[in-house]
Length: 216
Image (cartoon, rainbow, N blue to C red):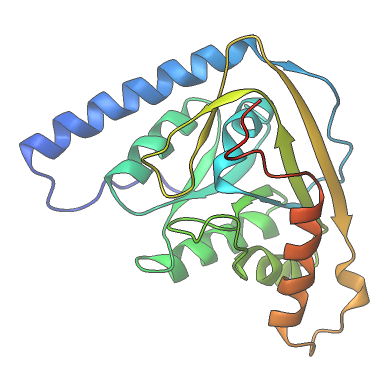
């Protein structure tokens, strides 16, 4: 996968905003060096990891320099996130359902077939929050890689202005992972993908209670 290409037609103001945002995100990533992990993710690799967008931050730190490919929105915010993630050793495909999604999916498919693990934010990039889309299931089906449903439980601060109510980990907080291997083998290839996604969504939600509105 090549280097991240910046969005086209960037104004001077957008360039400044993007640079500031990238540095803010890099500072947040630095803070994550203080995180403690209560348990480890005992998963097969390579695989496809299905995670919710608001719980992504500690997972980014956990899988730093681990040869993982992820997806980010093809906009200035997504570009800033991607640049910050590159410093953590990630490859990032830029795209979403509304823009560049098919290109991003094929980039992920190519990376998966090269033996890379894929991190898929299943409710991104615009939500609705905690509503799983079909991308991760499609990728696992096409590549025959195991699909893992992963939740992260930790103390943090919610960004109310974001669509997903992103949860930023507090410094020195302890992170617990709740996860399971989704049995893709139980579903024939001709099974309607919406049925598989619905069951995966049900299992992902059940891994832990949503603490939004009742912060720890």
